[in-house]
Length: 562
Ligand code: ATP
Ligand code: MG
Image 1: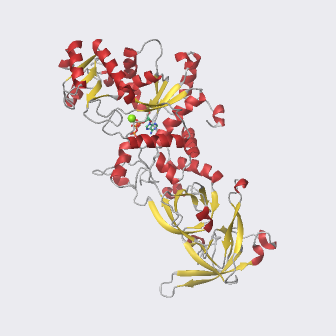
Image 2 (image 1 turned 90 degrees about the horizontal axis):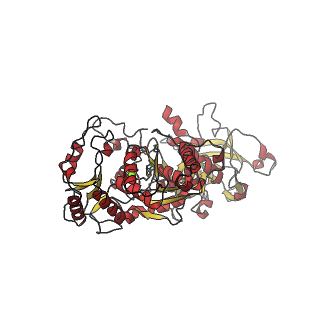
Image 3 (image 1 turned 90 degrees about the vertical axis):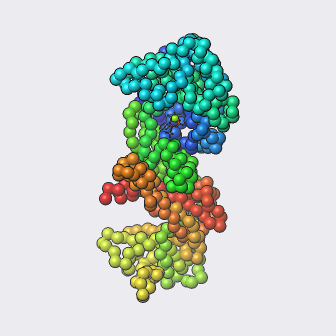
């Protein structure tokens, strides 16, 4: 994708692919697939798999299919199918119409299962799931063969057909491959290929009451689609002999898909399993799959992340063959890097403190010109209204300031961004509480841009908003979803949810420059000195709502070191 990729050393998957191309394996074709199970929204981990699968196809002039791995009717839903497609497109990839479903292959998989039975390589087993797993034994000792293993192909054909016809209840029988009950690889000890599930499937309806297992469906689906490189995560490494075994039973000719495993992406301070994310949604810990604190693609999108920043992140993380955990800060770094280039600069005061400029005429208003983005001159300029009463950040004023505090303090000067230099002359406090009500200042009329004093140096420049013109806007500030880097690190008797960070969301009302009400809701913004922001989907012209995507600096890392 990126141009720099051409100079990078090949990763281990690229090495394999290039060797296969050199050897003219599978006619030197490259055909990958992204195979989500439509049982949840996809997350940043899936983005890694998406970038890899579509990326390899792009790099080697190949193709990448989208295949829904919909073999488990109980947890799957079209809502998820639609969201997954939207998210892949948003990330910048396209399957060019090759949208497939494992369920489209149920007939073919059934036929192949019959073929296996006829070859004496599969049998119907009536032992329970518990017994099967017990009899499978332990890796260091051979398992025990099921009494059903001796059934003849005819008996098996009859029973399997009756399973298929719905004669037996859920869990009463399974079809197993007859491989090797003594194999040191537990997955080769007569794995289950089909189970009975009287359940409605989101695509095939009530047509089936037996459903293929992953191991029987995945490789065969790869084969049907002509996949050459079946890229998956490390937990499938131990399944690979079974993947190959299944294919060798049914494949004709020399074409074979090849399974290659890579380490899944893990990120600290979050969870990535769909089952857990679903739990957070269902139990109301977050507002939905697209809650901006979620590591889902739709959550990151709503939070203001760009596809470019996610792709760059995946690229920087690279490919590994061993499990590892990536710091969330790296994802934030990638967001900042891209947003800095594209974000429109705006002034918004998050914690307002009123200032009054005593020597500025009561009814005067000026339009100050300001750059929209110093990184991108083409973004143009805007005007910001200036008047006698302004808001600045509470943090930009200290009554009794230490030496190194260069912002506003009694007697000191600061520059107001795009406007004048002001000097603090007085502090107005509530006599009963001592709380500051407003700050009195004077301005130096010569310091406006274009005038003689425009270049006069002061130590600090701060942002501000004209009180009279300010918009009250809702701003949502986020922190990590979990308080622990590893949410599984829990005290005894508690579960991972006890590590949810109670301070992960703070909602405030801020004072914003009026331009924002006219801004395109799809734009990204930098609120000067406060971070990168975007409109939330809850925003309306009457009530603007913003999410902070990320702060300007990695202040979080500093805090956590304390
Ligand atoms: P989860 O554990 O979140 O439920 P999954 O592996 O069951 O994930 P699938 O829908 O089966 O989810 O995944 C689709 C593809 O994405 C698979 O090839 C899977 O290996 C890959 N994938 C899932 N999670 C990650 C991850 N964290 N990093 C990289 N690839 C992933
Ligand atoms: Mg899976």
